[in-house]
Amino acid sequence: MPQLLSVFLNVLAPVFLLVLVGYWSAPKLHLDAQTLSRFAYYVLTPAFVLTILGRAKIDAALAVRMVLFISAAYLATTLIAFALARVLRRSAAMTAAYVMLAVFGNVGNFGLPIAQFAEGQAALIPATVFFLSNITLGFAVCVIAANLQRGTQWQAITRVLKTPGLLALIPALALNTLQLELPLFVSRPLELLSGAMIPVMLVVLGAQLANAGIPRLSADMLSVLLIRLVGGALLGFALASAFGLSGVERNVGILQSAMPSAVLVSIIALENNVLPEFVTAAVLLSNVLSVLTLAVVLALL
Image (tube, rainbow, N blue to C red):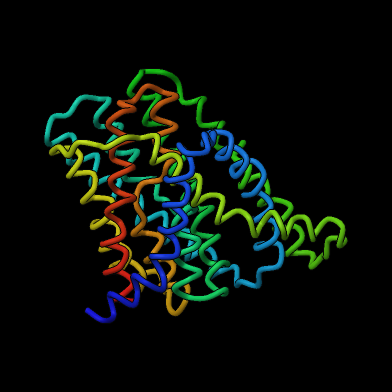
C-alpha cells in the first residue's frame, strides 16, 4: 500500500492534475479543445519528434524489437476485442468500436509524461519510439475498421501517411543518421515547442473529457475497458521478455501497452459515424479508470 501511494503521488498525480486543469478551465475560459488539439497534433508533436529522435542514441536492432513488441501487444488486444464482439454477435459498427478502442492507446497524452516521471528523462526516447509505432498502427487499424463497417474502400488508409508526427520522423532520422546539428535559430524554437507538447496535450485531454459528459456503464463498455486496461497490461508483461526487452525499454514498453484508449479514437469515430457517443464515453471511462490500473502496473515494475 505505501508503494502504491508513492506511485500515485509522484508519478500519476502530476499527470492527472494537469488533466484536471484542462477539465476545469475549458468550460470556465471557453477553451476550444479542437483548436488546441490541432495545434498539438500539427505543430508540437512534429517538433517533439524532431528534437527527441533527432538526437537519440539507440541501437537499430533494439528499436526494431521495440516496434515489434508494442505492435504485437496492441494487435493481440485487438484480436481479443474482435473475437469477443463476434462471439457476442455484435453489429458491424459495435465490432468496429471494440477494435478501435483496443488498438489505439493513449501513448501520447499519458504514455509520454508517465514514462518520464516513472523512469526519468532517459525514458523519453523509448517512449517516443513506442508512441510513433502505436499511433501508426492505431490510426491505420481505426481507419480501416471505420471504413470497412461502412463498406467503403481502403484508400482512407493513405491518411496515415499524412500524420504530422510520422512526417517529422523522416528528417529526424536523417539528422540522427548523418549526425547533423540544426542551427541554433532553428533548434531552440523546436526545443521550446517540444517542451510544450506534453503539458498542452494533457490540458487538451482534460478539455476533451469535460466536453464528453458523464458516461453510462454497460456490458459492452465494461468489455472494452477490461480488454484495453487489464488485457493490455497483462500482454505487456507477458511479451516484454519474448522480444528481449529489459531495463528502461522493458518498463516503458509495458507502461505504453497498458495505456487507456486514445482520445483520437473518439475523433475518428465521430468523423466516420462509428457509434461516436459510445466510443467517446468508453475513451473517457478508460482514461479515468486508468489511474487505478496504471498505479498497479507501476508498482509491479
